[in-house]
Image (cartoon, rainbow over all chains, first blue to last red; front, side, top):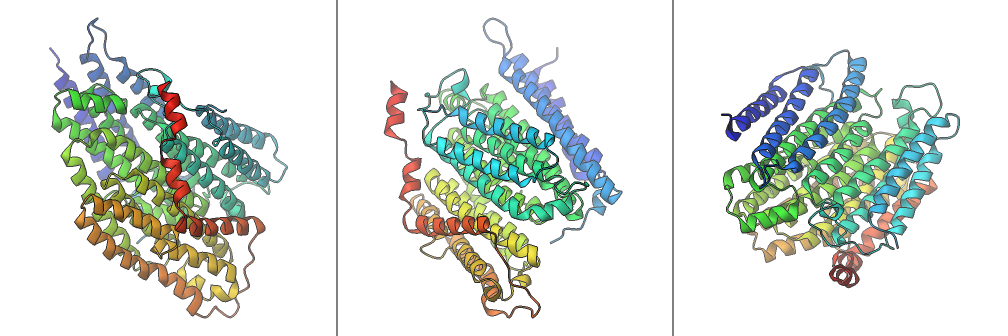
Length: 106
Length: 484
């Protein structure tokens, strides 16, 4: 029997992997992928919370599922704009590594 | 009488109309769209004074995630005024934008640059009204996503691209934190509506640890938006690299909306004792970091970035003292003085540069600009009879009433620091000699008018704050309509 805790563990794992990817990887595309992973971790736990919060009729709590659709839509829009920005950067600098992006400094 | 939700819809439709009209008229002078945008937003601003009373907060349906209380209407007007001034600045900044965007036509890229702030404005207005986490998330993302495009707009300039990518990555990271935090709050309370979360927290027993974890993640995300320490790392780079009107928009519009959401989100959680401690720590760190890191700066845009972090600190003192009125008044003063400084910065940067040394002898080259910058800097520093002073006064007054001794001491010390770095600019303008070959600077009629309005606002609200305080009080007409 899979419990709520199992889903939350996997979702926490996904969130951690995503966050670690943002902090440790040096390729902006990979960083961007990791960011999407963090959003999907939230989606997974929202659906799990929704599934395990049944009302008297045995129906899941749909508030969370509606929120998941909003997150998916927003994430798609974010990818569209974000990849455009990254492509513009690549055209200008011929690189997508964070070490090479160092014009602005303290 | 106009229903409140119509305001955002008009702004959004007007933005779409301008964007489409721009696409189908390649030959005309694109500055027409800036004037059309200013006209449309001014009309909506006028319309916001003839609103039908909003419905009371309902348990389901539209009014469960949208509110039209005085705070929301106040910040809708705030967003409209900010966007109008940003568009005025964008007209002055048009030549720089044109150089930064590839394209053969004489006005390539300008139409979009004038239309996009209108969408940001719609997002800011929705943020002011959002009382449900789903609504907060979606409107926040509308604002952030239009800023992704605006920050990166002059993409021939490598510094702008770099600023855009940094803003993209860190904003997306803060979105991730926000969503995951909301998830945990939903998991504990079973609600996304702020009012019902508050109700659930007072009536039920709940598990404190996951709730605090979720709230902490949400605070991290909002800390990014309002540029609070330790989530301020993106601010100096992005502010310096972005096109100057966008920097002004980021530092005023985005920050103000972040504070409205912060005030609304914190309200149901104030029964938790840990929240107050976290806020005090954040406010103290932000005050210290913003003011001390501003001291050695030589680039004025970067100096204003650190100053914006410092002002987030004063605003957080107001939040930690639970005074929404003090925060709102401080934001009005902050709007006036910050927009004034950026307006002068745009004009001077077109004739020289953004370094403080470029301001040497500005008083001789253009007494009007030097005078405007003097007023802006004095108000940012907090000299009496300016809106900046009165804002600090209300914030510290609220802190005294809540006995926040630590914050008061740090606040007074950092105000002293502020005087040093703001007056550094004043010294360059009035005491240093201008370079010999420097031309006199001409200011267009439109931006001269905008600057005079902002200066007048700084002095009027510096001695007569009542109109703003009254606008924030619950109007009796609305409350009777709500009970009917």
